[in-house]
Image 1 (cartoon, one colour):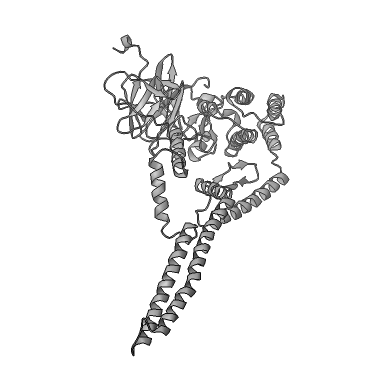
Image 2 (tube, helix red, strand yellow; image 1 turned 30 degrees about the vertical axis):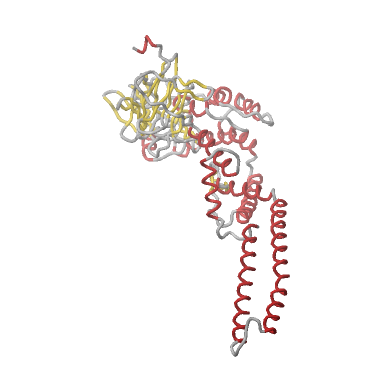
Length: 504
């Protein structure tokens, strides 16, 4: 923390704040205060200020943001991801000079640097005081060496080159930015080639999508982070196939992998049809010959009305023949899969039966796959009915000594690690609570020496223990059977690891 400042946290009905207080306001820069109050500056936390007695309080809006420590501890980076992150951080700091602010007045304490994990952006505290100085070398060294995790991959020793640049006696933010742009290949020529390649890829994907997923929704788009290069801001759109498109493609590939079987099946059915149709046609001359003989002999028709009766009988026999022939044709046409009429209801019934029964078959396998994905995604465990006694909730391979059980629902959140993030951002948090009122990263549960603490992670709608709202970024101990609320979702905390004599 900056020398001479005390840190605290406060919240209002819909916001969370970091508050830095000082008794010495002699070095405050009024024009910078007005600049911060009048502008929303990218890369800096929203600022406000007031006086309480002799104390000067600087307020920073940290709603829906997590600390740098939490963000980096749950992320692993590939080469270009990490270089782009550093470049965005460097650009955000460098461009504050456009607002007559000093680079040296940015607070470089990882406990008070915040991130938006969805946008992958950092936000800093700015201290508008003339006496404050910081150390960028120490910050970037700590960010690269201590706070960041990396995937194992073949690289060009980019980390070594970064460390050499940071440790250099001529280190500066502009020099670091130049080195990062060089490592990423962001000169004008390389950028134009990259954009051209991306456009070509977009056209190719668009053609592929049109041919494979005709009639479906347009593919979603994901924005690549904007890179501030001093010349212009680039925002490149890259199409991302939806889950429905991927499933359709997989289905198409599966169908294409068995063309010979389908062809053989159709040929077999067609052969049976041709055989029976041939027999039927060969019998027609026999019927006609018998009919002519009956007319010539006068056995069947005699008298004045014999000829009209014979004509009517001929028409009736012909109609019956045509009807029989069409029935045979339609029967084998449906069996060969050439017509979908009457088959949809049959397939639907089979799929419903497959989702309810165990065993083999495409419908049953698909049902099991969806069930397994749902179990992994939501991590919902079968809750036991609480009867006032100590209970142990078992997760496959793990014994959860503590957990949250939803009051009016089936959701159970097992607390089986020393740190559990809770929220609705499912690809980042450890326990998902699916509600629009719950923050992307809403709260954290920390376990230390068998004591569990609940921490509100700057949520907009608050975290509560027994209906008391918690201050953001402040540890509050949990006791067995506490009522816990994340925004509008109510849970109860159970700790099954307490020895019997302690639980009394």
